[in-house]
Length: 212
Image (tube, rainbow, N blue to C red; front, side):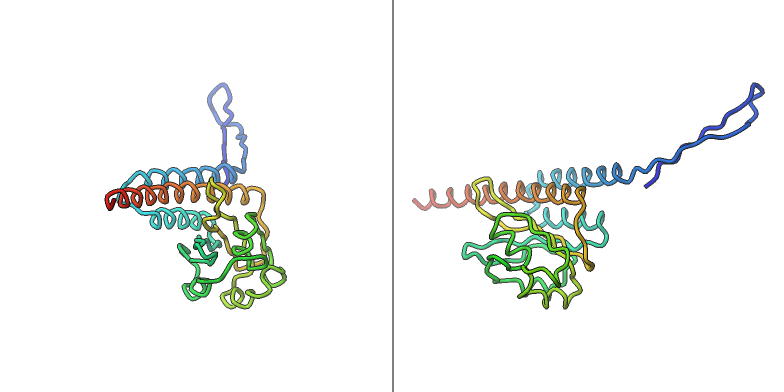
């Protein structure tokens, strides 16, 4: 995005004698505005009682993908038995996410499995050569996925709830701006998940109280 300004210089008779101007790259500013607008949209939507967690995450990830046109995002949940449960992946092939279901997390279990295991951000800029993808690269490459960055979603209690990931169909490392955006998206997901899970716990407690 470029901001283009021009000014006409006139003489004492108001005749145009020359023009001066400037061009300013506002790509980063425009990008920040788009991310901020997406955040507002999601949080405003979260105030509606008839919108569930899945709809909120879908809105967030679809918005993220509209801004990053060549990105494939996903949210995986971590089950109590430490296995993966696909939750939302707007652009990823269903055939791919289905095969992730039930995989147990651990070291060298792709970007997401490792991120959840280590509680650290995992960047695999080249899936074909990355050691964490040795056992799973054939699956990813089958669908043309060549890089994957994954961030664990960690509850304030310290428990891992899942992972937010971004795939690309090319070898790619994140820029500092992209990493910052991933952190922002991850934090939004964490807030949404904690809020909805708290409501579930309250409902469960009330049901138990009613039974007693």
